Image 1 (cartoon, rainbow, N blue to C red):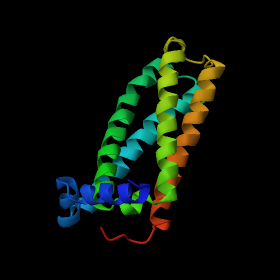
Image 2 (image 1 turned 60 degrees about the vertical axis):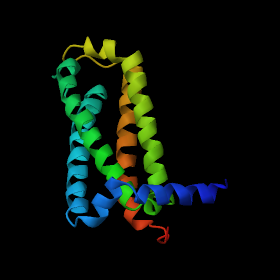
Image 3 (image 1 turned 45 degrees about the vertical axis):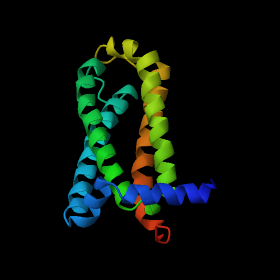
Image 4 (image 1 turned 90 degrees about the vertical axis):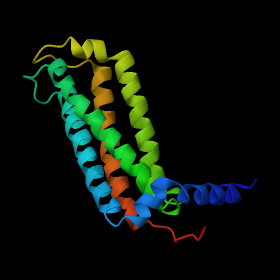
Length: 171
């Protein structure tokens, strides 16, 4: 099967699923999903961003271990954004699969995930043991900076998705 034929078949299947039918037929599905998507992104950006800024040396009076509890909100926000993002894709797969801005967003999200895994495997214990006013180890600071850059890239690419829409494809 050729790549183009596979993509057409995949998109035809996606638009036949119940989530696609839901998001394309109920007039409030898309705006409610957009709202939830941005709430999730805000929770993620606020909690992860504040934690990363602490790793970089801001708000030194706060122990990173104490701030770590906020990351649960970030993970919850990511989950909400992931679910609503999947709804968007199910409603208009061609507008995402052929969109360069979406490709950038997906790559940055994958890199963020790898950065999180590396942080928890390599640096979390040292950071959790830090007291207020302690400097984070250099690798943790680098991971925090990478996290912030990727978070900003995800937000920018997500916003650019609407500006780089490919022509609609008939299934």
